[in-house]
Length: 232
Image (cartoon, rainbow, N blue to C red; front, side, top):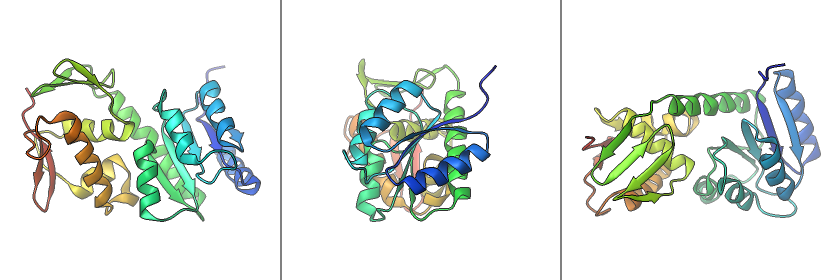
């Protein structure tokens, strides 16, 4: 039988939350594999190869941030953090570790479902963007292979960094506002979280620009947003 359902690995130590999320997702024809510790979650991600990962941060063995880092060492599977931690610094740490989205407890199942589908749609859009190699300055980007090099040296971009760069490439002919970039890369619930955008644009400039303090390609439009210049 052809697989049609979305597969999810749920890493959560609270039994009631696991049961609730699993029941609700299975009612929507998704398949859910449960893990109650971080190490079990990393193992399940490797063996199950799910479409989506949902990870709590407060796990009994290792912190959820470490779980994300371990998974991101070999996988770019869409990953949603589900956590009671609500401070901005903790959210930024999760995104910097490689999380794609962050949902604070208590949460509604409708919002979780919306974020799952939004992540999968965004991943498909990047995957369907074409096989052309995009060049600007010393940088070469292959959107299909999800690879980036500068002056012939391969670079490592996190999934969020790559998605931000791909969004700028797809819209290179116009200025992208802060809200447009945040909505496209992180989702509409993050449309005002400009700090995330500044952090990731800074990371991209450090990796891609000859002089990050005076960027030639990842250009700021003061008070508006950003645009990518110089595509060949």
